[in-house]
Image (cartoon, rainbow, N blue to C red; front, side, top):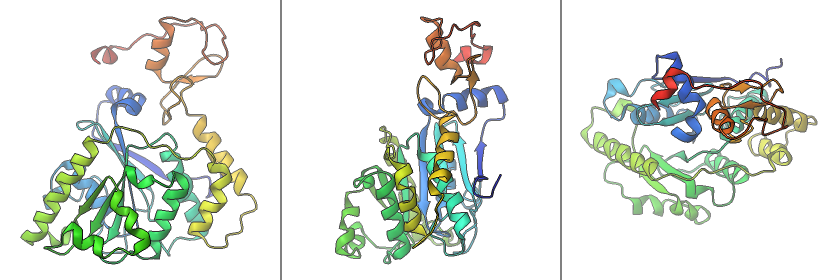
Length: 324
């Protein structure tokens, strides 16, 4: 397997019971809100995830479960997902795709892994930018989101304006925007924050951070509709790469992306069409399903919904499923 195929991804959960975790993973597409955090390296995405995951701005709780650093170089080197079963949320932490330190192979890996994680849809994306300076890296991210989703991607986005000085208002931030970026005002939420944990001992910053946490939770709670990417990502893949790698020459880009889509599609439930993240049940005919999807189907049918081959076994609920 090449480096390009070896996309790094890890899932962290607050569940210790394996059977409970199995159930949550099988059904997270209906139980959990999928939230993805996007921005440049070192901007504080992981710290903000920890604030939301632990629902606090206390310093000792802002360091886990996502790894954080205390400088602008960033520490997230692969896409990680953090499952909080209490709030029924899946927090997806991404690498800084526009980081100048990444080589072409790392960018391809990062983009492939990012697309794998949004192919079944997301409820809300958090876009992180610095107060007062939207640079070329930010503009690349906006262009990337527009190409992956649609022109109105920002309707499903909350803009997190980090490093906001005390006393700054929403209107002050709008005044810093260039004319061609005024559309960002239409985002679902504009959240002014200063979430670098090194400023925790300054009361004004704590106030900003506390309000940001409340605003983010409110935004998540009202986000119900899944935003799904465009259907023609295979055709767009080279264009997506060229946003991140100018004048990239990848003659085999179609095979790279088709393989990625094939691997992802192989993990889709044949009934609900949602990614199963490797938690699946396979019939003798080879078609795969969420266990509970198949249980519901078998109540009225005795053939595979995909190929109509007779289902020779009965799928029963295990004891831990009976509690849900």
